[in-house]
Amino acid sequence: MSVTAPIPRVGGLRRALYAVRGRAYPRVVGAMREPSWLFYDIVLPLLGAVAFVFVYRALGAPPRFTGYVIMGGATLAFWMNVMWNMAAQFYWEKHQGNLELYLAAPCGLVPILLGMAAGGLLGTSVRAVVVVLTGALLFQAPLPVSSWPAFAAIVVLGLVALYGLGMVFSSLFLLWGREAWHTVQLLQEPVYLVSGFYFPVRALGPWVGMVASLIPITLALDGLRQVMFPGVHPALAPLAWEVGGLAVLAVLFTVLALRVLRLMERLARREGRLSFRW
Amino acid sequence: MAEPAIVTERLVRTFRGRRSPATPTGAPVVALDGVCLQVQEGELFGLLGPNGAGKTTLIKVLVTLLLPTAGRALVDGLDVVRQAPQVRERISVVSGGEHSGYGLLTVREQLWMFAQFYGIPTRQALARIDELLAVVGLAEERDRKVQQLSTGMRQKMNLVRGLLPDPRILFLDEPTLGLDVEVARVIRAYVQQWRRERPGRTILLTTHYMAEAEELCDRVAIIHQGRIIACDTPAGLKRAAAQGAYFLLDTERLDGAGFLEALPGVERVHAATLDGHTEVRLHLRDDGAIAEVVAALARQGRRILRLQKVEPSLEEAFIALVGRRLEEADQPT
Image (tube, rainbow over all chains, first blue to last red; front, side, top):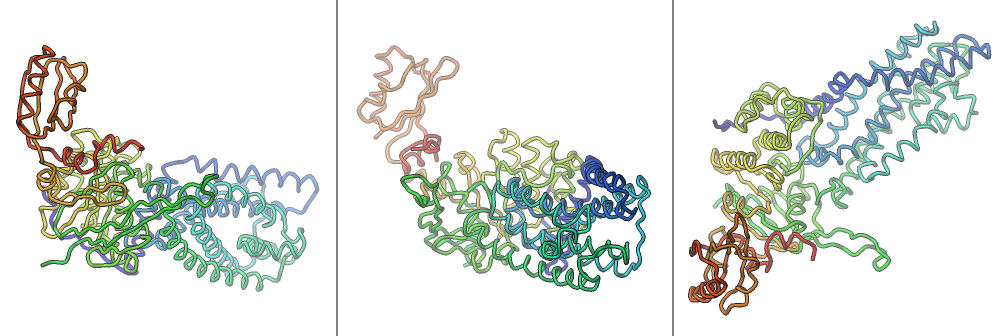
């Protein structure tokens, strides 16, 4: 049997979109074929949140604090996804030998990173919704939304900024070896604290809050809480400022990610860091 | 005359060495040391050398994964440094022992994913995947998860991945490394078939299997310590090494063949004992020296079971050029 006919290939934007779809696919399918995510991505974040729910209840805090905690648990899934499945991903890809195949492919690394982000986003969004619904049902948590447009703007801008940050990290991790693992662990716990996953971030003081706002999840979470508990949530800044801040971060991290990726790719080719075998 | 498919001009690649108290900044390791090559369009070109000779480094430079430290490399007339994206449109690479992809995907899904990176529309990609899987005898495994494949199956799948985008130039880096004889045969057969199917398809193959290079390649370059030390057709390389005479001799079991090396006119002896008899490969200065060998065996009381004059093999050419057998050259010096 012979396979002689030339195969059609598209280029440019269409190929980039194909590549995004191609790389997103294993993320989505992998999640469906490995149901352990139900435990790791839903039960574990909920367990962390449950402790805080009981603390707040024991202190006689208003019911909205249960809502705070549930929202924190849901957004936690995104942070974990960005850190483990975006930032550190190139390290694993390098380990498996995928990275050099990605780079040798004509689509370039950007669509592949976007595909990783899209696949992760899709899967994590499902997980976040399940966490919110499960938490709301278990604890009868009030989760009202006062403005759907503001809610949607915060979610979209927050996710773009967050995954943009993930892309910046993944480019940096292109040059790192095993340190990637330690760095992710180093970043994980402090961010849980300073981003106010389980309490209003303003409790840490305005200065800490402002610095923590460089992490998009801080502003997004605070903004969502403002939309869900208007007038009673001790906000870090007015809602419009937070939405504006998220927009700035979204643009900043996206542009930075593209530039850093190009720079790191060149450095990695120069230093020989794209593969373990030469 | 068509432009060469691959050209390298005084290509150098060094790596920073490991740091030690003696060399705190790390002594540089020279992986490629002024490599000059030309591979013609449509050629199946072999790069033969021991581990650490620079074969893989050369491929990585040519497929744009590694920048050269000095010199220049062109692939299909394009500079691998300045025109890397255009080079990537034209090439594909398959390495031996590759574990790329995702174990949770099926073979067909995995290949489809890679097809997307080359901009192949889904319908055509799936049709081509099925065709190629059938050709390499993997059709029945197409819905099996990648993590369940054997090493040989996996390498067949990797070959299909490399062929999917229909590259102008295919780089095969030790494609049969660690595979059993039958799988290696299937892969070699299809590589030859693929190239013959359309004129202009070029393959650069690295290997450290002599027989593979001899069977497949139009021309072979021998690379050693980052340098090309010879480049010719397999027959040409053998002719160059053919000074003297080569004999294959089967005798009753010998406990050591060292005494043969001491005989006048004997250049090199390689003996292997199996099933109670010893096969001796002899490189002699000239035909006349065989009489001394026969006499020496008679003195030892060993009956000669077979004696045959043979053409020098590529292995003999390699020994003549490098000074050691390939397996010995693999060992650190």
